[in-house]
Image 1 (cartoon, rainbow, N blue to C red):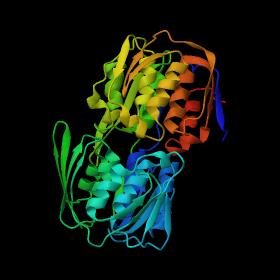
Image 2: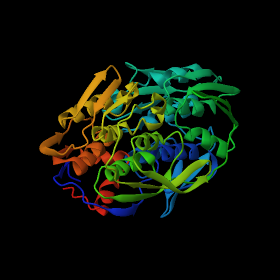
Image 3: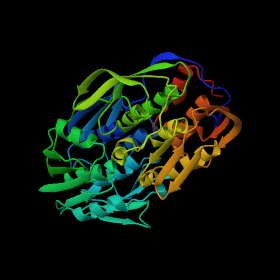
Image 4: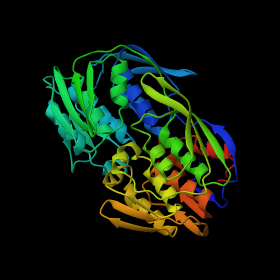
Length: 441
């Protein structure tokens, strides 16, 4: 694959049906849970992105065997204490914060010392938000400056904890939940609202879990040392991957698109709610439930009347991975769009809030920032003519895809570097663009 792409032409009108790649969050969770189950698990439609492939490599190093078949992966688990760890194991999470944080939760009872490392981008991210609660269980954890590499050695005398997750981070909450499975007794978690795939998975696997949903937070209780059996699971489409094609359609001329079999879990659909508030026409079709997860086909069409939004901060956690592409819509909206309390964006693969503001200003869009609040001054007639070079964004896959959509809808000549970044979450990104008629060289 080339190190950079060139975009010189806007995409022409299209009317298509597509399927995006499988959900990354659910793919990683399904593999990690299969590695802790007793017996055989079969996972269908597993996302084969770099983050998930790194997850597979990690569980193999921990003594879990799996086989790849044409339609699925088969995993052979030995229960909560089934890892066969050797001395001096190093687990490379690559670019995946989800993998690095969740696997730390699973390793709180590791008999051997294990080192977790990541790529240059992941190694810049704060890990104290997860290492501190894991230490409460009794695990021994060492890291310099709260970042990777992290060295963890488990305890044979784990204890349940009472923990308050205040950031709205599903990664932190899920890591604590996975650690709670290893500790005797009941772990209690008060968690700010965030995606709830792990809770749904636990319920489907008959793991003893109690969840009480409040308006702004959830109360979760987990009974530890509860083994569970192998399972079959089919991973649905990823709403985050879907969002780039929603916006491509909204900002293109006379276009319609149906995206099939997408996960529309309410903790993940902030992007849909926000775009609808901005006057985008988006409909769910063929909605159904699969093992607790809502799934539907999503229909979207072009909009010539995008409105600005005062985005409720209550939607932040359910749209945290989609704000870059939402900002692109705000750049074309009529009026001034306001977004608040977006500091969590700078805790992602790159400082996304900082980078998004820089990109918007590069294309001539006025942005005002006060700490982690921003105002975007929309230009409904925004039509670019200049040359735009995008690089030095820490190979963040979402920055790459956001700027690709900008080039295909706003005009101008674009040179965008670090093409391989899409392999992190969306390896078929270019294939689908080609299906829709986009010219990307």
